[in-house]
Picture: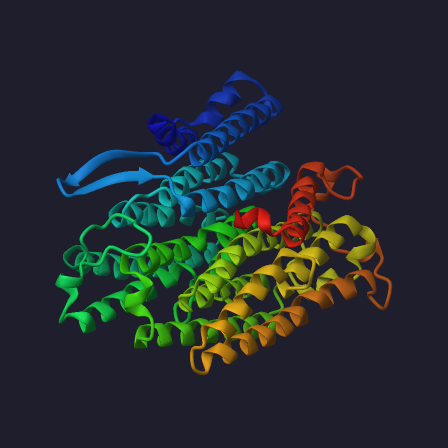
Length: 499
């Protein structure tokens, strides 16, 4: 089983490097024509992705496995270990990667740069697998940095000036945030009995005594540092810039999964190293809750005002991920359950929303909200999927978004924290109303535009030729339908995720 754990991390990484370094597509061109080239590339990527997902999930659900890769020094190994958090996150990552992989076939064929895209696509899955299976803070930090390096080229993919600027911003913000985490690790090595992850924390009470003030400051720096990747105020600016210029399937991965790397890092630091007892009732907890709620409200307001469709969804991610951070900051089991459930709910929903945005861009070249009027009659299946995702993000039953927000609100009310116990649900409710305000009008105007918009007057993207008279290519529609079904299933049977 130890070998299985390493293979699950190494296989997609090696496959991605092969596509990037060994000029795989040029070799295929020499073997056959363009059609053969694409078929063999898709076959290679499909086999590698499916095999990687099967290996990663098998390693997750066949027992508690651990394996040491190497040692930096005698007391600091770089090693991997399967635990509950790893199982939970790898399941979400795998579902989204499979959906995006299938969707990418027609989309990236038209977008171009397929070899480069699929190389970083597979490499990112391998790095994320290593990240969620990290057994201690050092291993987690190494893979946290790698996530930025292997996902940044996805933002840079089309090579425009806007893409270059967004990629630089993403790289700068992410690296600076990671250095905040590294700063904290230096101190924790002194105050913790071990840097390994252990539920409840590993702080050495004797070493901490008399140094509580400095350690609280260190923890706050780590929260802000890892909060950068999660888009928490005031370090959110990279997120709308990066998500809006990346190819739509890459935006789906960034919003649904990669921003959650910051969430995972915070979960590990707070619940598995520091321990909740050390933070409960301190200024760090109150400031963390304040920043999370401010981000929830501010992100919703910015999304409400934004007219670009993908950028609106990106600002929505800023808000929705801070739902998770707020739940974690309450430091209660009920709120944590809601936060983790929202990780899954937001991942599925936001992946679906960005893939829907990609359909509109692929078929018609539409990037603005006002351009989407009347599309419900031409693309009813896609618009109904969008509507279900929108209802899920608002938190309307029976979608999974309702379940996560219910637990978050109940966790806040039951926390008995002065002011925040009632302020949290109020802010979440206001944010939900704003979410309805910036998502549901697209559905209303999509099905009831008010005045007919003839197909001849539309600006049609050349990618429409790929659809050959169909509403949408099946490989793009199937992921939307699967994600929509999952949003409903988790909303109706939430206990399946809590087991």
